[in-house]
Image (cartoon, rainbow, N blue to C red; front, side, top):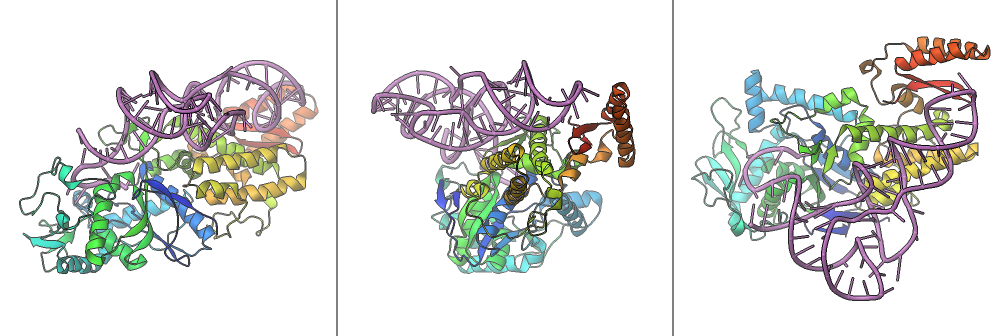
Length: 479
RNA sequence: GGCUGGGUGGCAGAGUGGUUAUGCAGAGGACUGCAAAUCCUUGUACGUCGGUUCGAUUCCGGUCCUAGCCUCCA
C-alpha cells in the first residue's frame, strides 16, 4: 500500500497517514455558511480537499466516506433573510443551489454526505445533553455553555494557552459566563428569528456544535481526517475537539488539515475594500478549469495570491497541456483508455504515477502539475504516433488525480477557457469554416494578400488560425 | 503582546547539504509564403547577520519583513 504523508496541524509535522479502518476512510470538511454567493476564497478548500478525496479514493479503492456540511443557520443568514423578507430556508436553498452549480464547474466530485445543520438540531441537542451529563456544560439565562476550564487539553490544536489568552479582547464577555473563554452550545433566539424548542430555551445552536453532531452521525465519534480553512482552527475546530472530548471522551479526528487563505492582488478579500470576487463572476470570465488550476498551482497550506497574471499563467499552462493532447488522436480514445471523463472515477492507484507520488507527499499539487508538463513535453517531442497515443492516455489518467484535462482538446481550444459569449467573437463556427476555406482557396492561388486579410479579419474577431500538416484549424486567440 | 505559517531568478512556484526544477513572460535561432503551434539556445535565484561543515539556498541561532488567527470569516 502506497504511503500518504500529510501535515497534521495537531502535531505541526508531516505524518504518515494511517486510517482507523482502511475499508472505510472517513473525512469531514467544514463546508460553507450559506448566507451569500460563494467567492473564490470559498473555492480553495473545496478544490484542494477534492484532490485529497480523489487521492484517497484511488489508494483505498473507493472506500472513502467524505462529509462536507452546510451551515444553514447563523446570524448572518438571519439578517440576510430578514432583509430579503424570506425564510432562512428559502434563502439557504437558493445559495446552496448556486454553490452546487458553481463547484460543479470546477469539476469537484460529489461528496458522500452533505448534511445541513438545520436537519440535525436533535442530534445537536443530544450531544449538548451528554455534555451536561458529563459536567462539561452548564445552563445560564437560556444559554448552554461549554465549560472550557474543565478540559485540560483545551488549546492543543491551535497551540494556545488559555491563561495567556486575553479573553474577550475583541468581544464583550457575557455576564452569564462562568469563564470568559466558555463558548455557546445553545442560545435563545431573538424575537422574529428562527427558533427550535429545547428545554433550555426556544433557541438555536451555537456554531461549533453542528460539526460535532453531523460528523458523529455520519462518520462516528472518531474519524480520520478533519479539514477546513486555517481561520477555522481557532476557535471553531478547537471547540469541536472540546465538544467531542466532553461528549464522547475521544479525540475527534487523528489528522487536521488547514488550507491557507487567499488574497486578491496581495490584499485580504473584504467588503470594505470591495475586492471580493464571487465564484459566479469568475466563472463568467474564465473556464472553471482555469480557476481550478490557479487554486492548485500553489501548495494548499500557503497563502495564495489571486491576480490576473496568475489566471493568465494558468490559462497558458492549460493551453500547453491541451495542446499536447490535441497533437495525438486522443479524440478517439476508447472508453477504457479515457478514464478521465469528468465522472470522478475510482481508479485503481498506479504505483508508477508521478502525480500520485507528488500528491502523496503532503498534497504537493504544484509538483504534480510539473509531472503533467513533463508528460506533455514527451508528447510534443515524440515522433512515434503509437507512443504519443500511449502518453496521451497516461497524461489524461495522471491529470484525473487533479481533476484536470477532462475536456476534449478541440472543445478547449474553441472556447480557450472562455465562454465564447463573453468575448467579442460573435462569429459562428460555420462562418469561421467558410472563411478558412476561402483563405485556403486564396492560398492555392498564391494570393497571399487575400489570405492574410482573411486571417487578420478572423484574428480581429479573436479567432487564431493554425496551419498544420493535417490542415487548417482554429481556436480562440490568446489574450 | 501570544500562537502558527512564509520569505527562491522579471512573475508564479517546487526542491535539495556539493550537479538544469517546471510553467508564464523576455531575447536569439529553426520551421512557415507570412503567422500560430512546436523545436533549439539563452538569462548564473534562493531576505539579512552569524554559527556548524571541506562545502549551505538547504541544518542551527539571532534579526528584519510579511500573512493568518487570538470567539462565529474558507
